[in-house]
Amino acid sequence: VNTASPSLAPVEVASRTAVRARYAPTIEDAFREHAGPVHNYLRAAGVRDSEDVLSDVFVDVMRGLEGFRGDRDALRRWIFTIAHHRVVDEHRRTSRRRRFLRSVPSEASFTHDEPIDPALIAALDALTPDQREVIVLRFVADLSLETVATLTQRAPGAVKSLQHRALRNLAVQLAPA
Amino acid sequence: MEDEQGTSQDEYGHVIERLRVFGTAPLADEIANGALGRARGRRARASGGRAKWIVAASVAGFMAGSVGLAAADVLPAPVQDVAQHALDAVGVHVPPGHQRFNDPATCPGGPYANHGAYVRAHHDDPNAGKSPCGKPIQAVAPGQGPKTDQPDTGAHGNGKQPHDQHPGNSNGKGHGNGHGDGNGSLKPHGQPDDKTDANPDQSATHESSTSIPAPPTTSTPATTSVPTTTTMPTTTTSAPPSPTP
Image (cartoon, rainbow over all chains, first blue to last red; front, side, top):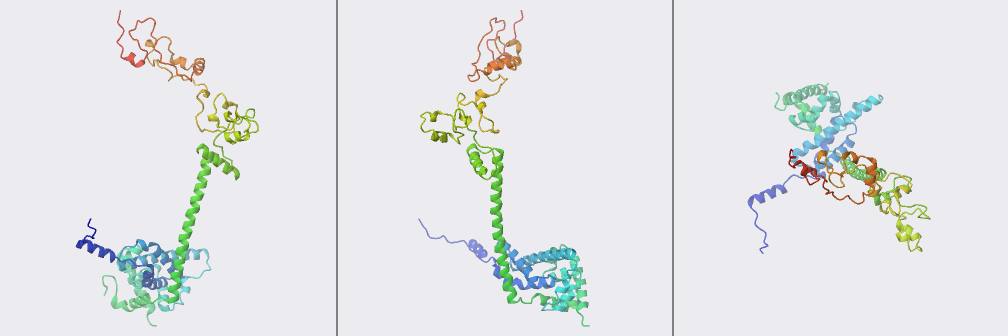
């Protein structure tokens, strides 16, 4: 019996190479690459305990990373989708808590100790929640208009409109006195 | 000037640049290490907690199901016996699987959990093995241990009752043929009628011989004015009509 390994056809070799080249990041890779932007996004979105929520986001990433299929951009979109859902949950929770305990101060008063750009955070605090959501996803998370529209369940035109008004308001807020 | 992404680079370029710089700021090492460590810890706790919850729920479901089945008395008799003993120890009373023959007159020193217990208790008695004591009532021969003599400790539907202990069954059908349903004019003499099947007196007579099925009747009418010689109703339908005089 001839036990020599049969030669592989070119197509088979190509498909094996493609399988080997599939983007399969570990949790460390994902964290190293995206933890910083996600944390900045959480702070810009006005999340009070951003480090805690960052941990929650990466717990979800750990759960789903084995089943992830896609490239580097898809991973980024997926992680920011998780982060966005966490932000929405956090805002709902804070809102309920504030309704229940009227003495709890608003979120804005917690974010003025921002080490990087406190003026920017203060200007973002002055936006409406919709404007802030769109502008932070568009430029802090650096997602495309279409992705933001999908994430926020709005039409691209509505996102563009919110983005324009938010930029105008931020420009006014950040203009030198 | 707006591009297709709705970005007004000319008018608000400095604002967009400031937002992007904020978004790309590096994460402090202590925050990174703390967040990843916390995430790993939460993941491990979540997995362990879920596994514990699944095990606890499975055990609780099995216990509830077992107790429920035992209480409903639908388990096989040996399993029901085991469940009865186990649950009795914790104060839950469920019916036993077998109702044992433990007539105080016949089985002194009882009640016995099973026949083996009786034999062990009476090892001096050479006839102990033949005694019905401790046997399931269903297994006791009719002459040795009438079921009706036993105190009724609960409804136990395991097994069939002995055939001769059926209460009066007034339906005589199935024992023999020749009922001749629907063709009374061709019914031979001596065959039971449908009306007499429901007669309690006749059914009682019939009941006394239920252990032996009645043989099929082949009697022929004494006066054979009708040219049929069989008692089966099916043959009467195909019988030729009576010749007209």
